[in-house]
Length: 160
Image: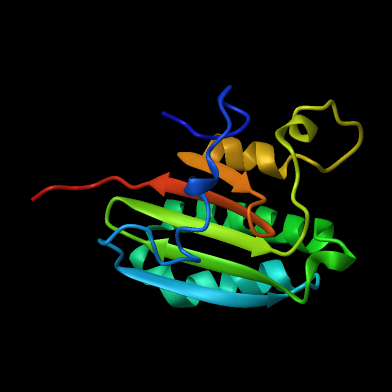
C-alpha cells in the first residue's frame, strides 16, 4: 500500500509524520541522526554529506543514491519555500532499520497542499515531489507543527 499523496486518492494521516522528530519510529533502528541545516543553497550538499557520514556504511550503493536524490529535493524545497516565516533552520531526521529507511525534513513554513502538486507545470523545475512519489515506498506531508515532509524506502531483507 502506498501513502504517497500523488499515487493514492487518500491523503496520509498526520500521524505518519514526525516519527523521527518525536522518537516514535521502529524499535529496530540501527542508526539515526538529526541535523540542523542552514536555510541556504548549501543545505542540500550538507545534508548529503551528513547522510554519507552518519549512515553511509549501513546503505548499499543504490539505497544511498536514491536517499541522497530525494533528500536533496526535500531539503531544496524546504529552503526555497519555507518563506520568511520559515524560521532559522531546516531539520533533517534520518534513520535506518533492517527493514526500511526513513527521512523527515521539517521546517517552520506553511507547507503545501496536494492540489498544487498535480497542477500542470510550464518550464523547468517543479518535479522533485514527483520523483519522491515514484522513488519512495511511502511518503507524505503534515502541516501539524510547521511542515514535515517524510518518506520511507523498504529495504530488501535477506534471511540466513
